[in-house]
Length: 77
Image 1: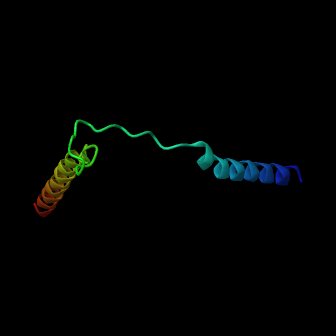
Image 2: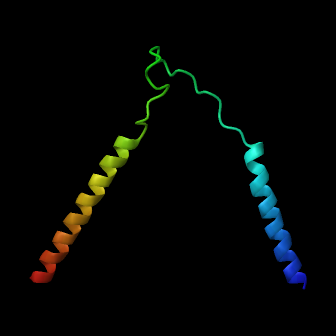
Image 3: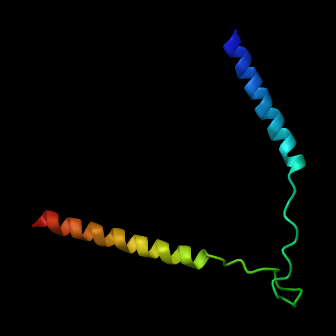
């Protein structure tokens, strides 16, 4: 019985915290114009690290391909 009480207490606290948190949290304020004077441009650049992630993915794929090729070459000898 005591375990069941704790379970419902924890579930109730989680439920209350999940329903109350969105009302308490607020979005960040406007970050500013980031130097853009043209109102048609977005306020800040979107490509923060996307190009680095693409390059890292290509390098990782090349390494995996090279490792697979080397593994197959060793197995055929």
